Image (cartoon, rainbow, N blue to C red; front, side, top):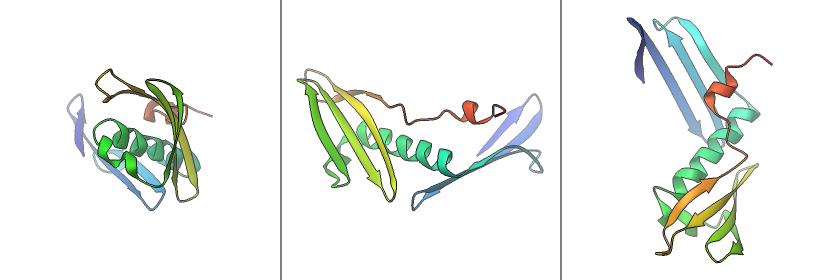
Length: 117
């Protein structure tokens, strides 16, 4: 990824594979602005992957790693297991049966990762 901060180039690298995720953002390509990896990042990226499966690619919801439980006529709780990481979300469907929303407490915003502990 290439981006910019008032006149300065910012480069980012994001990787998610085999249940592990890393994000590294550098100002001028040298100075680390954000580097995150580990359990929080892995879970957040698995939640993002599940979101992507549910909304832009709902045909993937037949994946056997997803357990579904009906909550209401148009609401389902989905639990996705990716290796040793388990995330869940409530999925909302419209009258036409297409997914319209995804809400998960397992997703962490990158901005939250930038906060001091």
